[in-house]
Image (tube, rainbow, N blue to C red; front, side, top):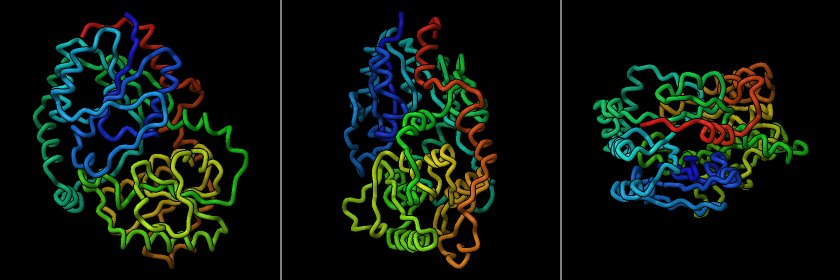
Length: 386
């Protein structure tokens, strides 16, 4: 029986960007119904309480699940015409969901996206970081990994959709078949690049909700105070504008909330959505460690990475990984005397090409949408027995 409905299992606030990356409207136009099983209330209760989700601009709205019982109840209604896109983190909860899916012979696929590998070697700094961020949620995750339950599951994914370049070939090895495609952000780039007529005198800062990201409640990766962060950012933006003549525009993180904060970045425009297009119109991209930096690579924009000592050791390691791969400078926001000596407006096209090949799109690979490619495999391949 052919697949008539895809069920996306998600547990990290399915945002408008996720809606676009999963190409929900494209899937609907291909004649496939879509359901979004939003399990953030089940997996990340503290995050969900701290920030209620916003409605999506599209034809599909998520259904929220707060208990395992609700999930298991609805799993029992799925048939051979249903297929699950499993995007849940490894945990005891996801184990019980996968186990029940195996019992019901529900077929599923996974998705992997390529990112720079974080070099964070074991040592005193790493040990202190993990100890300082330990909580019940992380403790249970560690226990689950040590339990070996994941390896006991017999219902392997039918497919793994591998989105990116050469660095993705190491992913998805437990699936029956891997489907290679370009990154989800590349598909958004393909759509938006035609809307970029010419550059404007702006610099884009890709915001990461450093002080108000709901994930900090669970993972405690960054606990940066507003009193420290925003003055640092405003001082740096003032310098960028005075030095380059570019006006800094803030591309707000989808999970940020600045409505109750009075001009946190100074008298600067804060925009939501259209990050790809705004980067395309800019002349400079500023970032910490956002995956949206890939848009700057695609548009061949100069990138400067920003750091400061109060960031967690993990965040600083992530920033170094991005900067090393792209051969881009890191500016310390506490060291303004060093800023003028750091060249950040130049671009090495060959380095960007290498990054694209590793993480965004294989050379000479077709431009077909990842989800169109996935549907083609799903429709032409006989469904295996679980």
